[in-house]
Length: 500
Image 1 (cartoon, rainbow, N blue to C red):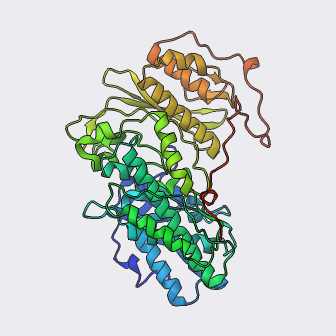
Image 2 (cartoon, rainbow, N blue to C red; image 1 turned 135 degrees about the horizontal axis):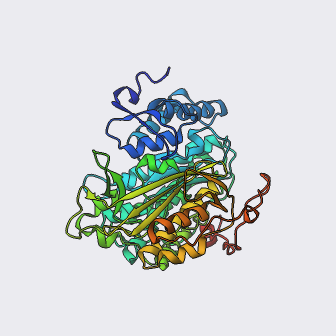
Image 3 (cartoon, rainbow, N blue to C red; image 1 turned 120 degrees about the vertical axis):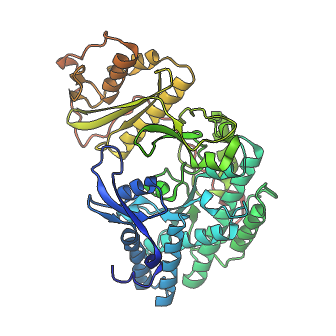
């Protein structure tokens, strides 16, 4: 691409592979930095529009140039040199896997953009946290989102990811006062740096909102050297601005492929899902691999990364919420964590068997993956439904994680089969399963399939044709089986302070 010669991309060695965004997606050629892992390649396959080849520098340069070109056209970047400096800084941020915009920016979709920063990527060589680099990255994210909003967006969505990975690096249990203090200081630093940049933009283009005089009190000290002091300094810098350009800047969001590109294993405030994850070795065999968080935690990984009680997430959210401009998204169910030896984190652990069924139900492709323990008992399930919408996929993933957690806690598989066999939904003729010809829904097929293979049950026949659900009109939204609890109104930080 013209304009890439003489930039940071010139020195980037690439490797090439074929991969898809998920197991059922068609494979596409992907070229990515040689040092990056296969997970990043799959993320790139998901971020890039279309189905053709993906070259990371070309894909990234597409949205970077859109940002700088729009910034120059709108007068938000005042000179070609300023535009070039921003482009160079964004390339460096991406190559360090420190930050990236959400999928909507990579695909140039007309949706509210967001920008996410991966917290573990800011760990420095001395074992501390690069607070200055993080604050600078937050400011850069504010500038990018302001430009993408044409300088008129009242609210921006700058967020962070993989708090759990950062806590693991400092050997902090998620459910501890020390961990909550670190998270609160991170949120305060994010808020202060974002509003300080909003103030700088206001000084240049005009203030639209009043500056704050009183903040919620950030932690006076944390176990991370310099973090509390950096948060206090960022808040003070924001308070000294002549005004603000934006009403709000900081909002956490569910993860998409951008988090995977950065190597972040969890979204926002989520705790770690465990110390190991399913993967494949060099010979293609299924193995359990230590997570990145486990590598950082070392010998303490099994204890540090065990799923915390639900109250721990609520306590973490309550500690951080005063420094957010919107309530964080509701947490998904947390999968039960497979155990690894406590003395050390192995490079790979031979995994018991795993099997995958791929079928078509009513014309829609579905895959069900089941992992077993070393005694052949069902341990974990996962779904892939590429043609479903994002909401439906999210519900399937959450249910699979809840079932996995239940199995790990001793809930018998029979209980899940009795609950979900013949569940209503979008069903139809099943192709690819000789034992099940019709299903009332994806859940009906999946749990009758598991009942056959793991319980030997033959008492769950196909539903009669007259028992099949009627098709739902495409214009009618899917109905949930129960009402969701009302979401509390977010407690905004400005409620804790007075406007000038």
